[in-house]
Image (cartoon, rainbow, N blue to C red; front, side, top):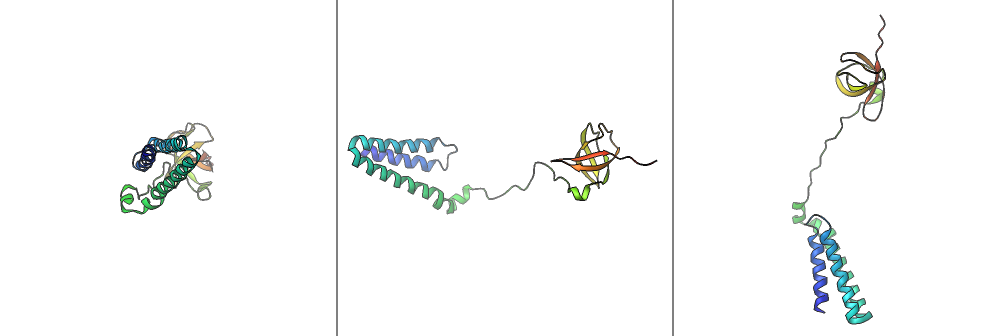
Length: 159
């Protein structure tokens, strides 16, 4: 009986420590300890003793999860361990609004071979040239927008 109680307590302790230690190893070991206690109760005390141990282990496991996921997050200790700040940055610059930039004139900021950067309305955008290679400083016109870049074509000025 002492071994079964020890396995249950070790299982609960390991599950509780899993909150503070990264990874799932302690949680798996804790679950295995509780299962081993139930199996041992079935083998030593028969069906009645095993069912009582199974019920007790389930109640103990449920209480542990309740404390970990409901009670603990509301404590001051848990707030010290948690991050509350958010990151507002993005990995890509905001792509232009197509309605505001469609058919606008601009200029290549780098050579487009066929991708590079263009300047339109004072802002620099990543762009793709439908006209093929364009050198730096060539006038362009915005003809579309795909996922992350403008689609431009060489601006044909009348002479």
